[in-house]
Every structure is written in structure tokens, then in C-alpha cells.
Length: 160
Image (tube, rainbow, N blue to C red; front, side):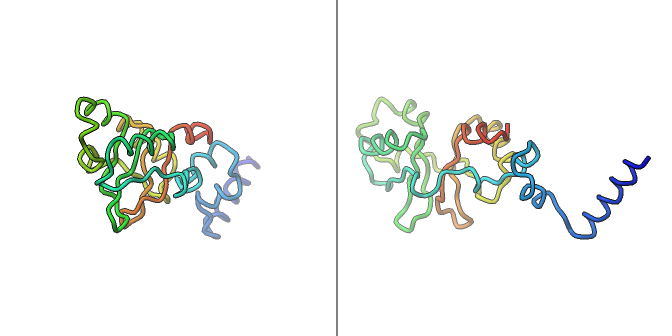
């Protein structure tokens, strides 16, 4: 009976103080609930890790950028920095016959799966599973690439 009373008092105080799930994540980041409440920004690789090319970049050069960064995708960005599309390993396989004759803009998937930095990592994992992809780009509200998230990052953090 005393445990129930103690729990009721704790919940009432948390409610009165405006304590939310995000606060729990801040105070207990190492636990399972804390990892479930992590945001994409906590786990993503930042702008320096982004594989970026322009739409007119030849696919031979795009392959080099893609291989150097090791995420299996390359972001194709316009001159204003906004996302034009994404070239993935799957896009390479689908276009292998004429790959050397094309540019990144011609091969790029124009409406790629993206996530935002403020999205919960658990929600991002659900998106990855739902769409069967391993590494979406992280974009800002104005569609500027900010980073990349890989499924391995989510697994290491204990989100899955």
C-alpha cells in the first residue's frame, strides 16, 4: 500500500513540475527508456560526414564520394544547398548498364526518405524498418542536408 502511495505522490509531483519524457531522457540517458527517447541529433553523423555531390557530377566521381564516406548513399544537392535527391547502392544496381554515361542528378531518387534531427530515434528506426532502408539523410525544415543516420548507430545506442 505504501509503494502505491509513494508512486502516486511521485506522479503528482512530476505532473505539477511539468516533468516529461524528454526530462527523463536527460536524467537517465543510459537506460532502455532513455535510449528510446534519444533524438536523431544525438546519434547522427554530422555535416562533415555527409557525402555530397552536385546534380551535374558524373557518376564515376559520385561513386568515389560514395565509397569514401561509406554510408551507401550520396546526397545530391542544388547550388542553394537544398536536397535534389539521393543516390543509393540500389540506384547504382538498377542503373549499372549506363552508369558511366549519366550524372548524379539523372540517377538520383528525387523523393528520398529523410528524417529530422529532432525526431525520436525510435521513430526513425520505425521509418527505416517500414521503408526497408539502412541510412536516411537528416534534413532541416528547409530541406538542407544536416547529416546521415545509419541503422548501426541506432543498434549501438540500444534503440532497437
